[in-house]
Amino acid sequence: MFFIMTCIFCDILSGKRDGHIVYEDDDHIAFLDKYPIDDGHTLVIPKKHYERITDMDSNDVGKIFSLVPKIAKAV
Image (cartoon, rainbow, N blue to C red):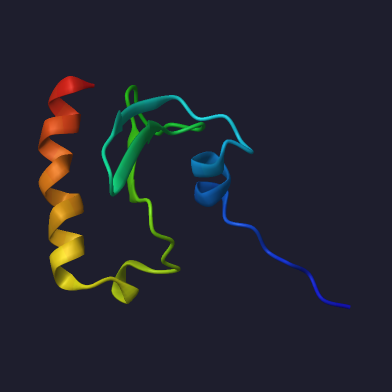
């Protein structure tokens, strides 16, 4: 028997799961964490699926982290 794992983040991107989106561009999306560790806890992810951050190109990692201060200030 095989189990197919779905990605929660991909489900949010596709609309299968609800997400409170606070930022979106062509390549990234940011949304509030369903179970925040603090008020305004926001997740910033690429729209392209990666299993791990280490699977990403270093330029793409840099693009995500360059968004964090902008989003943090807005939240």
